Amino acid sequence: MDSTTNGYFTTALAAAALNTKPCVLRNFILGSLVGGFIIVPGLLGNVLNLIILGKERKKSSTIQALCLLAVADSMLLLSYLSLVAFGIRGMTNGYYEALPFAAFASVYMYELARIFNQVSTFLTVILMWQRYVAVCLPHKAKQLCTVRMVNTTSACSSVAACVFYLPNFFLYSTKFSSDRFFYPVSRPLVLNTYFQTIYSVILTYLVSYIVPVASLTCMSVAILRSLKSHSNSATSSNSQNARKDLTKSSIAIVIIFVLCQSFQPIRRVLMWVYDPYLSK
Image (cartoon, rainbow, N blue to C red; front, top):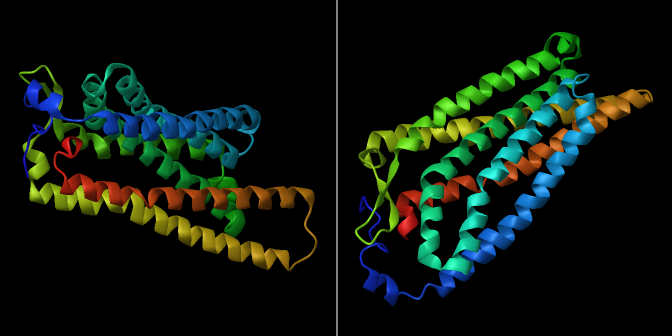
């Protein structure tokens, strides 16, 4: 693997010979149009959730977890705005004028997005844990299902996510070429076999995917079994029906989370195959 991104950044003559229109169009459609179509409604939906649920967040630990999850998801969406800017910049100023956005995003913004994504992962687990305790362990709900408990575990999870992904900010650096192109350069840590195997593969996927998905699956199955057994009992009150609806909504969030997170390993594999991935 080459350790620097010299593919498109060598000389102005080589750059001029490339037909960049397909790349510009692709980045604009996928990054600006599709990305904007996902980011803007997502941000609006999170704002509405905070407005609607914010009034009750101090009364329910589950609602507090939902509000914190909306904040974390909003930060994740904002961190991907660089994709929108890259596509628009390419259409207005040309492909090579937009490359600094891509270089900066690939080195810094994507890693920042991974932190917010991990925080969202932890918050999803915390949300489902609250529902699991409330439904399956009701005798412990008063001690564990509290707003203070949610705030404490959320703060600790956020700090843990920042610390865990901190090494990724030192995998690449940014430099200017002789043609004044801003490009990323792979650092030796990227090519370290032990680092890639232990940290980037084993630990990262245990923390970001395997353990959370396994935990969410086990808690969801236990909750569904408990709800099924309760449905065969006497008629439920309105408050119990509301709790069931909240639990079902939480399970729906888990299903969406698992589906979205399943695409992450594919991207990481492509990054390993194409090092440095921005130049491919």
